[in-house]
Image (cartoon, rainbow over all chains, first blue to last red; front, side, top):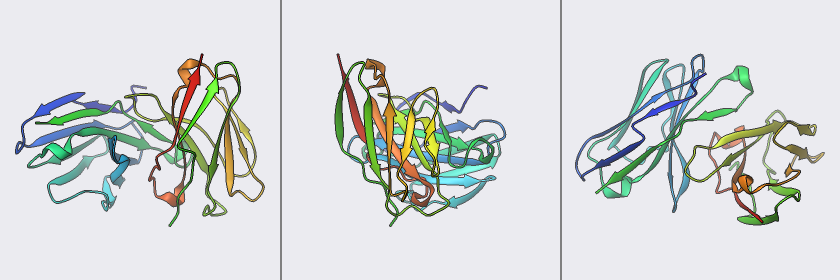
Length: 115
Length: 107
């Protein structure tokens, strides 16, 4: 089991550029989550999907952020245009009811730096 | 508003038991309590979960009070590698993590 796979591990970009973060959940998991972590705000839930359908996106900070899950094995989080305040570690997590209600498996994260 | 409350930070001597408390007074009767930990720069890692009975696994023990309004995570013999931020969470929080407890295991 490869776990939740995120790419890239590190992303450095300039303000105004489009950024796309990618996530491959664990096979068979039916929930996928995107979190953002900063020193100031801690671990924030941005959005989560159930069976590829967005369920709650109330944590998405603004229209510059969008997330998609075109199939059960892939999700993207896009920021367009990016701003320096978007600098953070972005985590993807997946969950399967079969492994315990609420047991999340996190990826290693993407460290995003917007200059 | 469903949430949990944990101490901001705790210290523990290496080799001693670390007892991390969590208050979850808004938990519903069928909601499990989950504990995760996050070692610096890594993603949070699942530790243990429980409903009403005490639980133990290879990582830790979980004690849940009879009224289910609080719980304690126990690391029986803390090591330096247990230094991390520890989060408790229940489903009523809609997968929203609080700030957790920063545990420092001291040599």
